[in-house]
Length: 272
Image (tube, rainbow, N blue to C red; front, side, top):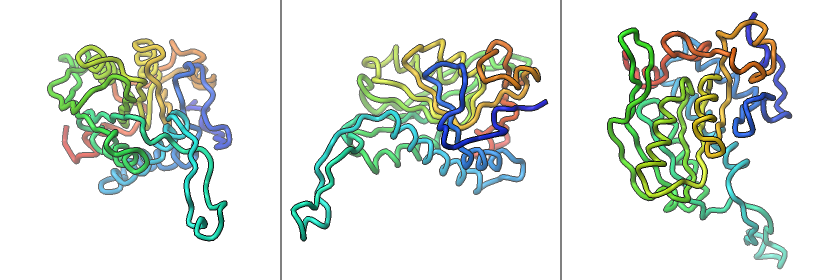
């Protein structure tokens, strides 16, 4: 028996119903799921891979901006002001003064972070939007099992305190890289950020548990698909998160199942 939570997807619902907590947002988006199915298929290769990823991150960034970013009320002149004194829009817009940093975790995060960076500079004050870079790698043992993540270099271009931090990374697998990166920002820099958002295309129950338990209330996860394909049949028939301790989305090498393969390799046409 396979997954059941995506057999009937209603876009009007907005989010998948789950028991992972209020900081986890699993989008109920049939179009995104369609593109993810295409992205995950063995026949999907470059340049289609990066085109789909770019499109999905544009859409996911829109969800986060609409749901989470501060707003303000403006009185903005329209072209009709030439003809009438009522030629103004009075209403809500995204507050352009918010300060945001998007973090590129090399290498699968390079493209997603740049897409988010460009989208943000189009609607916010561009001088308040920044992109940072972190060079990370999985640490594995002799059996090729992931034991953690290590930071081997970084380029942090300014202050962190009070800013929104975004971590766009296609595959939320073990959560080790994200936890290590967030701890770096919390411990090594100038102060706590306003809030942190992980933007993923696919996540596992293991990822959600590690991230939400490590930073309760500080990190919110936005993702398009939950992958828990190695869970028992009765768990797959239940609401996601209802039997969290029995859910499994990682194989013995810590790759996501059903997943999409190693996206770092696929996005860069690399062998390993």
